Image 1 (tube, rainbow, N blue to C red):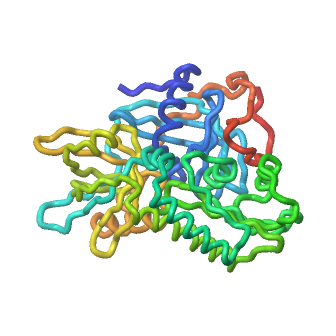
Image 2 (cartoon, helix red, strand yellow; image 1 turned 90 degrees about the vertical axis):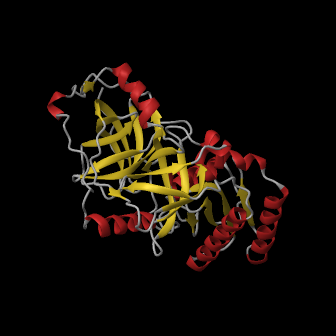
Length: 402
């Protein structure tokens, strides 16, 4: 039976246990898109990174599914940073209902080309493994570090299971650092595709560099363009340019490629077959094994290589929504989570070819009426910093009245 939650204590629990931990989508103009939850504070506020350019929305609809239930949250926009698409949102109500498949699914019949999953790994285990770097990985890092220093003497490779402040700010903004001249605050940054120079200068207040360095490029080292493993940093006494950025990006990609190829990360050796697929997720089968027992649980996030057909192949990220024990194998239901644009385009291309252009792409209908929500006045606690672990995101505008 459907019910709407408005009580502060219940809303706090829902945000902390679900919205802050599981894949979340946002409804924009009737369609659903992945939303990244950056932080949570006081149980009622979320700091979220949302796709696209804002049209000045005063409310946001965020939703997720968990344990066969659909959680449809209505949030008011408290603050917005147009420069990096971050918004501070306050929860007003959550409607809980039985989860139903709202998107068309492609059933993969026998006889057609199968969809294959390989190299499956638990994202959490991926990060943990960085704390146990072996000699093979150390040799790879030393080789690339030596090669980098031939071109950029003031360079380093940071590769660790612990996030330092530089890695954290790049992860939160999902952008590299590219500062041509830190002494020129108004023009020293390289544009909107990089960490804002204002945030970079705040970083330097915590982690100082030698005064002779005026320019920096730091690029994330990622596991298959997803999970950050570390970064490559270059400092310079003279302004670095786009050519330097491209070279350093290639260095970071080479480090990631060689570490993955070394077999350091314990990926599943199974070649799994998908049962069905949609724009939002898929179902597949996996045999019982020690790897399965350690890596698969509802709510865990997986990374895997997905072959849709001979032409469409990529690496995807998804959260486990359910696990069902069949006669011989386990069926795992996945929900795609914050995909890269390239992989999302491939997925849409494949589903379009089976269902038709745009079919099965609509977000669930909004059913919680704004008029039924509690008024903002008198309902919100005093505003505080969103999270001590999150740098100041440069929000503009006034706080919500209390």
